[in-house]
Image (cartoon, rainbow, N blue to C red; front, side, top):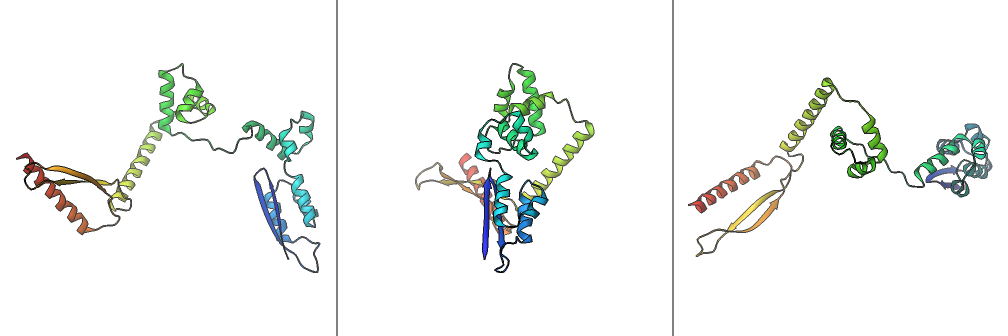
Length: 236
């Protein structure tokens, strides 16, 4: 018989699949205990005492925040009696004000330098205005402006060498046609039977195919020669 224990509190989904024996239905398998122990903030000895699925569910409910605890304001005396993990969860919930997890954007060195330069040129701009411009929080702007660290000559040379190696690798990929470049524009010219001037009928964008194809490359050079001849005829 297959029993599936599911518990979801504060976005933590835990699934423990237990295979029960017909002769010993009151014992908890060791594999299920490992899964549950790995996913909850509690002591390992408590899981060893839990022998049935009902004990596991009680332990899950006791090791997660309830809706009442997350919504109400808890006093300092009640917070002192709580375990460490519960105090940490409540403090994070108050800090983020119930918002979802949103990772902070990391600015590059060039963006940090431009932020400092913008602050020097416009000192009246606040941290919130700079944060809106660079799409970061005001706390990140304050830390960047507060930091006085600057790379020395050795560090700058290492950065330049690293960017040079990256540019060489990217150009090599473009030369080997591993990465398709931007689509090239194809100019379509045409004229009537009695017209003396050439007119542009349309511009067609063509993507460069991946792989080395000498026939296609020779065809493109042949088309370029035709365009050069047409341009000479127009100039005459």
